[in-house]
Structures are given as C-alpha cells and as structure tokens.
Image 1: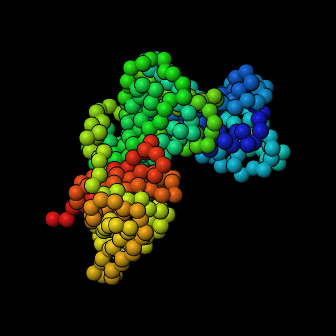
Image 2 (image 1 turned 60 degrees about the horizontal axis):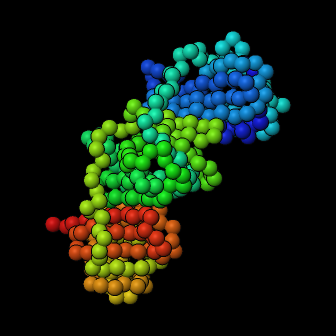
Image 3 (image 1 turned 90 degrees about the vertical axis):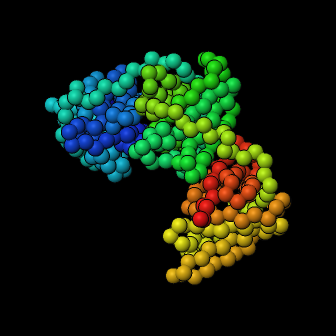
Length: 367
C-alpha cells in the first residue's frame, strides 16, 4: 500500500474516526484503524463493535493495499506535524509515515483480523439536513438516561412520519423533544420509529455540526446507517419500546412567563451555591417577576428577583437546578417561555419564537 495526501485531510478523518475505537483486553485490535488504499481513495475504518465509522479521502494511490495500526498513535503523530503532505506506505505489515521532516514506522497487525462491518439491507431510508440533525441531537442529549435496567432510555427516539422527523429523550425526570420538516420526500410514506444509542448519535451530531449537506439514514435488521459523501456511520439499534410520553407534555397552562434566558441562567448558577444536597432551587412566578431562592443551613440563603412578563396564577415550583440549566442551555432565543400548572405538575420550557423544541421538567416534590 502506498498513498500520498494532505496532512489536513488525513487529520480530519483520523480525529473523528478515533472516537469510534474501542478498548478491549481480549480484542485489542478494536483500538486500531483499518487503513485501505484503492484507486484514488484512502479509507479509514474504526469500530468498537457497537458502532463503527468508515471515512474516505482522495489522494494519490501508488500501490493498493491495507494495514491496521493503533489509532491513537497515528492520530497523535499526524496532529503534531506541521508538514503539508503525508506519505503512507505499508511494508511487511507495518506503516511507514513520511513527511518533509519526519520518518516514522508504526508496527501493525494483520488487517485480516479487523472486524467486518455490517451490510445493511435497508427496509427504510430518508434524507435529513445535517445541520438540523446536529441541532436536534444536541437539544435532546441532556435528557438521555444512563440506565442498566431500562436500555431503551439510553437512546434517542427517532420518529419519522408525514414529512416530519422528531427526536426525543427522557430519563423520566425530564423530557426533551425536537422536531422539524424533512427537506426531501422519503422512499416510503408510513411512520417509522427506532431507538438509536445516544453515544453514536452524539458523535454523528458532533461530526455534522455546521455542515451544509444531506445525511442519508437507512434502517435494516436492527442496524442503522448514517451516510454522507465520504463517510458512513453504522450502529446497532436499541431493542425495546420507548415510553409513550405525549400525555405528559402540557398543552394548556394556568401560568405562563417570558423572561431573559441569560438572566435566568446566571441567577440559577448563583442560587446553586446555596442549594441543599437535593440540588433544589425554588422558582416563584408572579405578576411581572420571577423570584429564585435557595437555602442551605451550612452556607446561608439566597434570593433574587428577575423581571418577567407573567400571566395567570401565582405559582411556586421546586426544581433540580442542574436539570433546569440543562434545558436552558440548549434553548437559543434571548427570551424563553415557561408554562406551569398546579404545583407538582410538569413544567414546559421552550424558545419564545417557536415550538420546534420542548423541554418538560418534573418538579421536586417535598413530602
């Protein structure tokens, strides 16, 4: 194998692919890349057996072939060089890396031992705007649960129907839902739902952030494929049924309030210094104001008042301040909406300008 390319192109591929590697005492090759040169393309593959990535870049192939080397080593070396071009050559199972100022040999292992990636026989596919998918993933990730007993809560629900896509996540204490219109028609008309592991969706969202392109999503045999030009991400789906959550999203409110998001966030952070071990903060909504207060017998007390446009009944709600900050952290508008009902009922947060993202938070109930 012999391949020459730019340092920048190779670095981008390696940095992303390294996050898909695994650590295993019994299968150390999961910490390696499979690097293949064919025609005018270099393809880098990484997997941890739960999910995998395959990315390609264009360059000059002097000789076709493949090699498997430790991902961390080659990624660190390419990141640290300032030379513009990189020459990769496989020799006796090892990888020779040459630049203008460096000559390196990385010991390899047999590429034939590298795990095979699944071939997905798709039963469903659609195209999604990359930037919107990345935004949607980032919005719902804070609500994902980490549970050994309820694996379906460890993932993000994708629900696609009638030209719309909806992502949802919940840990039973809060729920996040992001939705938007599909930019292209799907190959089928019926509704389709599946649960994808949050770690792979997080990596996909990170990889797609700010990119102007379409992502093809294909489903088949309990597998999912996210595909863009030059990159394919594979993952298993999570089996099980995602909780039916539509009934807990409030649609009418006894109290509504609009206030500055940044002011609210800063007030919560300050009040958290005086919070108890329950990480609670009391939020009182009344006409023209929102009052935050916390109390800790060892530290002291804190109260602050924020201007707000509130209508309806006065209401006082106790929140976990971390959960509240998580929701506010993924809202984008300068002003946000809070909708409340009776004490103890779910509270809804969203941007002032639209309803394409909802964050529903259960209050803390003191007995």
